[in-house]
Length: 257
Image (cartoon, rainbow, N blue to C red; front, side, top):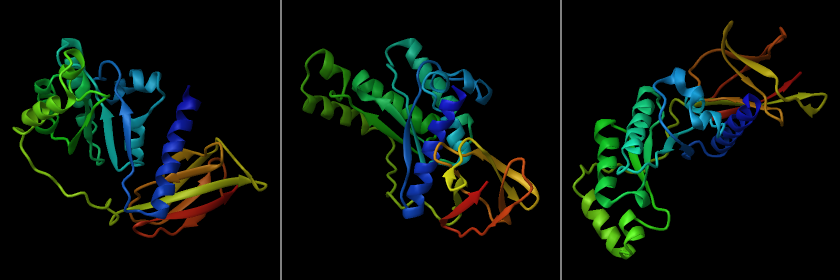
């Protein structure tokens, strides 16, 4: 399971860095799972269902800065006390991570009445001060239109009326920030072939700043790095390879075993 989880994280990492290498101003987001109850804190994260069952270590992705926007799919029924509690638990957990990555909480419009959707959105934006909200409709915009056959157009008007009372502070959609963005996308080979599952160390001067494993194709990467004197090496070896980073860009590196 650890190995499979790492492959998913490696895929997210590489997609992020490959996109940024082409156009750094593009936003890369992920809609992530929040099944069941929320963990009490980061120490409890490995016991959560997303981590154990879905093999999604999205807390790790935040720590690596391999996303520009996190959208937790916090799809819970407000009318069911247990699920309402889960909704708040996940929000509290995400807020406690103190990540620099903005969060837009996802709510399930189709599982809730218009009034309960407004309640969840208010909680996300006012109580937890998240950057935004994303409402998801699976065929039906509100639970009323699913259960009682209310036309979707009418349900949407009701939903809009309920949401119109929320504080409005629309922000323009802007390019992803690049002023402090510096990253490395590396490729590790052995005799011309990809070398996988190897630990690559990133050094800032003489100190190991971060480590990561190469994926099944030999790729590895480090994102959102501060200014400094950087080099990389294969763990267990002494030879280092210096890397010059350019602000606002992804630096590609070829590393041989």
